[in-house]
Length: 124
Image (tube, rainbow, N blue to C red; front, side):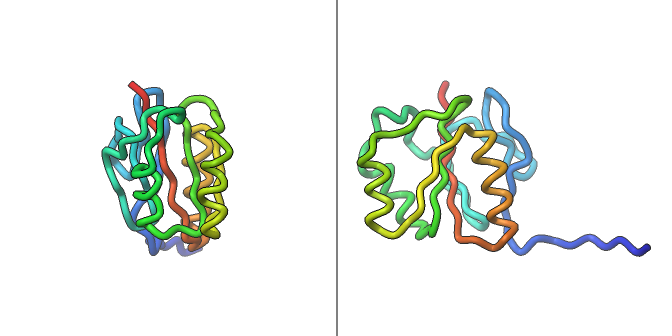
């Protein structure tokens, strides 16, 4: 049996999640960030789901996703319903899960070639 290395046609993958951050490729990121298959936006200013400004969500829109996955830290915390409406009114799917589930889901969807963006909240 011949085994060959197949490189993905996307640039970023989540390799692990810990209490201190998320490992993207070979680097641990310890501040909130946005991640698409081919884009990494570090220092995303969202650190608490309850205190989000409109600019935070505009940064997501700038990446033009079909689906936005929000990782809310160690536990799943749902944002206000108006956040869901903000994305749905623009035709963008919106899912909320803990960071570990968000990382797994992001990897699967990126591998499928989907236009997905994940936002990871890293609290200090």
